[in-house]
Image 1 (cartoon, rainbow, N blue to C red):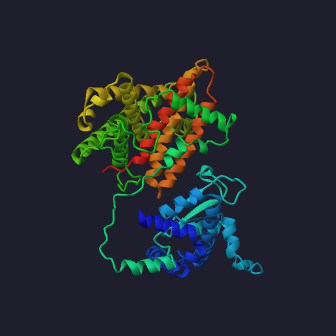
Image 2 (spheres, rainbow, N blue to C red; image 1 turned 30 degrees about the horizontal axis):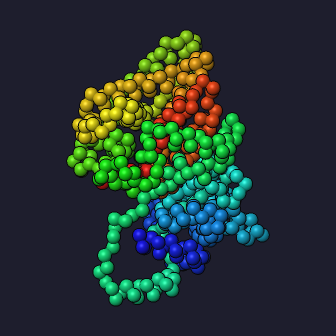
Image 3 (tube, rainbow, N blue to C red; image 1 turned 90 degrees about the vertical axis):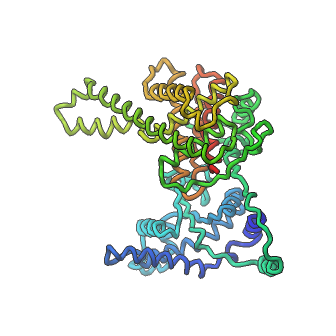
Amino acid sequence: MAQQAQLKTKFHQWSIYDLLDRNATLEKAYDLMEIYQRKWLRTRKRGGMVASVHDVLQAIISIMPRTMEDMKKEQPNVFGLAVYSQEFFCFTNNEYLASMVNRQAARPILQISGRTVRNCIKKLLEAKILTQKVNFVHTGKNYPEPMHEDPTGRGYFKLVLNKDLLVWGETTEEVLGEAAQSDNLGSPINTDTVPSFPQMYSILDNKDTLKQYKTPAGIVDKASASAELNSLANAGTEQGSKLNLPTVPNHLPINFAPKVFIPTKTTDKEEFFAQQLFEQARVALWGGKNFNTIQEIQAIDFLRSHLRLTRDFVQHFRKQKIDQFKDSAYYKGLAKNPKHQWKILNEWFVSKLPKTELSAVRIVAEAIQKQRENGLKRGYLDKLYAPQFYFISDNWNKALDYSKDDFMKLYTQFSAKNRSLSYYQTVMEHINKSHTATLKALKDGTTPQYAMNVTEKAWRKIRGLIAQAPPEVSQEQKDKLIRKFKDRLQPIFSNQIS
């Protein structure tokens, strides 16, 4: 903790320009470029790390200190998170990087284009010199905020440099501190005091973040958003303060331990999803209680089995839908044009069906949530079996069956007259997709912030959907949908299983 605090103070007090050892950083980058080039030339005779890639890298390293110094002033929270996670980045675009390289305006033959820059960035990502490229929507600002992140955005993008390449100079205080430490060797370091990751709570619960934002229906102001959160807090919701506060409530089990937000290292996608579902169940059904290693391994294995069986259920559901479509008069009417008929089936209809793997995750996650809701309603949550027994119990199988029924209803078209069910269908589909999108971002992204940004975007959208609810939807139903979103998403950010 002291080391983190020292690091934070260092970057807050001193300029990034002064701290960055540019030459040493470039030397480390060149090592990775050389490794990349050796692999490239095994299958190709030319290309790879050409001169333009070196030029673009030089430009990126030149822009990074300026971006970070501006972040320190304009977006101090973003800067603080970057320092904590050691993710230093720059905001730029292809054209600006090209203009930095093209300083010889009178020599057009030496200039590069935005397309060339894009290819250079791709190679720097492949060489692990850059760890991430994040797109943002066009805002007219030089430095978009996290809420503006969009995979299809056409505005500025963020390029994150590999933290292992960055070489930082030492301050006078650090040099003096090292000299003092040499006289006191063997001082114990407390490795258990790793700070938790509180940003999830600020996204979902901090009213200061609920400033005006645009929705398809118009603008929802801060006052109405705060009033909605107040109604949740004062209504005695099912989850109480258990998931709404970053502190550990007194009523939780004695051995409750908030988990640190650390992305999983497993490459097995099924294992990853099973671990995440276990973490959701650990928080939702057992109040965050810790279990021994054998209990966790057995529970996760059962969840993997349930995921496989649920995938079979989804595949059967898809097959039924496809068979129904093939029997329709519309499909049979296309028989005279087999190519068009095939295209309509495979590129239009099938693309609208639920994805097998992600749908299985959503069904199991909703089953956990249904068990939580029913347990809170009937007061038996504290009497549930331990996880390794619960996931083979009748209670669990009933919850899973109810979740499968709900899944099928989500893909049933309700009539326009039944606005309430249609609305519920829309919001639940968003909650399901938000959950799995965040899980994918956590697994595929290189930083916790990437998953956090996906969650923040989903949170803004659900607030927009709540604001557009038809008159038939009661406030109680709205509150329930928000609770469902929170219950599903918050455990993701406590995902380390010890």
